[in-house]
Image: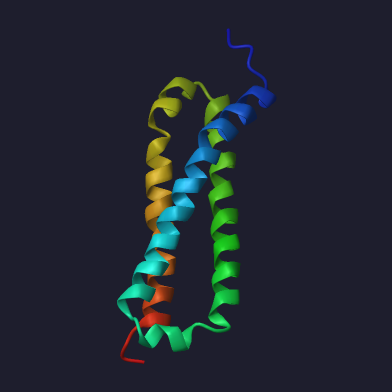
Length: 115
């Protein structure tokens, strides 16, 4: 019988997701910076108030990343805990791909040379 508590599940979730949040943020930043760099030198003149908006998008992306905790803790309380722990990287991968779509579209809108 598993004697794990909600505290144990939450601790396990934090240990798993927090190091990946760094990678998540680096991927999203690389997308934005990549489109910025591809549009140089024209993008230098565009970057003004957009930085404030980019910061807000980054905060929202991190809030979205935190939703993985709810899924993780719920899955750990189920009878599929061991299976979940082996395959929860899939949730990270899918979430990062979907999250990467948002900065890509914003980057194209802001930094496209044709604007």
